[in-house]
Amino acid sequence: MFIPIGEPCLGKKEAQNVSKCLKSGWISSAGKYIGDFEDKFARYCGSKYGVATSNGTTALHLALLALDIKEGDEVIIPDLTFVATANAVTYTRAKPVFVDCQWEDWNIDYHKIEDKINKRTKAIIVVHLCGNPAAMPEIMRLARRYNLKVIEDAAEAHGAEYKGRKVGSFGDIGCFSFYGNKIITTGEGGMCVTDSRILSEKMRLLRDHGMSKTRHYWHTMVGYNYRLTNIQAVIGLAQLERIEEFINRKIENASLYERLLRDVEGIVLPRLSVHARHVFWMYSVLVTRRFRIDRDTLRLRLREKGIDSRPFFYPLHLMPPYRLKAHFPVAEELSRSGIMLPSSVKLTEKQIRYIARNIKDV
Ligand SMILES: *Cc1c(COP(=O)(O)O)cnc(C)c1O
Image (tube, rainbow, N blue to C red):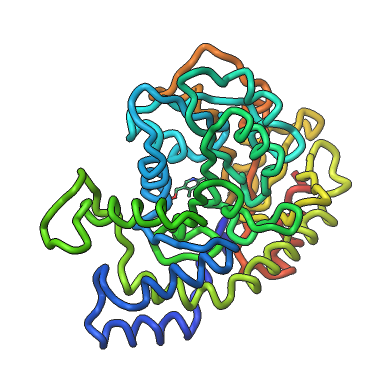
């Protein structure tokens, strides 16, 4: 037996859609399903426009380019995130500036953002880590005071809400990933959502080699090929029909994990805010000293029982491309103690009980 950390949930509808798309011949990045997927996903997020991309990283890069982020600029990001958040900033030759996380939600500590703002600061990328929405109203207030752009990296948080509003719709642009282990998947894929027609058109232009819409092979800027294919979009449409079912399943799984792990000494569970709809992309806990066995040993023991897991991301400031002498105590401690447990929507109650029992046995 092997319980994976995550796996896509693909049904008959996905297969039928792919077959329909194949028969139509429109398998590349022109075709009617792309626009349909963009419209439906943007509407789901409560945003006006959607721009589909080849993956979540290109979505972030496109968003930064559309907001004119360039060499000499600084972009504030959390120290604890998947590396793509920082890399997208680096692609524009701007400098990513790291801010520590907070214990409450493991997201960027917005109380510490102000200290990092200077003349060169142009934007903040907020990451909704593991599906837990950051406190966007507070961050938007701060950004407006300093005239900063806000990009939401919602790659792990499709459908998450803060005070009833979906993530991705607070900032200037929200970015999503449809990689195989994300909440919905198109294999590889991504999307930018925005309420600004101007930004959406700029992103469409940049996504398609910067080619003029009215003059073929006339390029008004250096663009990119960051397009999603029609065949990926048609999978996305089938996935989108089930997104609420997937999320509710993840929330149910999380509450079962919580009930089973609540009383285990040394295991710290994610805190839930009354304002947040946490979508639990990956159900994660902290393995503290009081557990008496460290996180990595726990992972090995679980692996012997056929249970997959992941450590948290490394803090960006400790990795070779971004090394700094600075100290980010919360990000460092989260990274040292955090473990992501199996979180697939296909998990059974029996499997979750088996995982929890093995954690207790260790
Ligand atoms: C997955 C992820 C990305 C990148 O998405 P890809 O589709 O893999 O390029 C960016 N940011 C975060 C926080 C992610 O989890």
